[in-house]
Image (cartoon, rainbow, N blue to C red; front, side):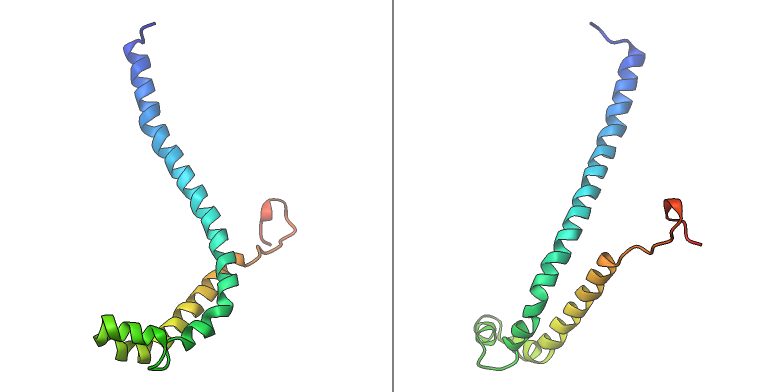
Length: 115
């Protein structure tokens, strides 16, 4: 069976538009799933932040010794700014997790319309 030129053009258009739309939908679905998973992961890992900060606050800590061995110029920055940087990242991730886990406001209206 041979396709007419109009049918072939329509099929080409469907393939050109449909495949990227399906790819975009799949990507958005994956992002939504991964977003929920990272919140759970961060909630589990959040308790370890103080332990990690303790690993870089003294010159005898293993992380500092390894840094001194491979990148000695980073040691002063790591000891001075490392804990501050890690706390800032942890606070930012906390805020992001709160945003993603915030419950939707209940409106009591069909369709969720606010009063």
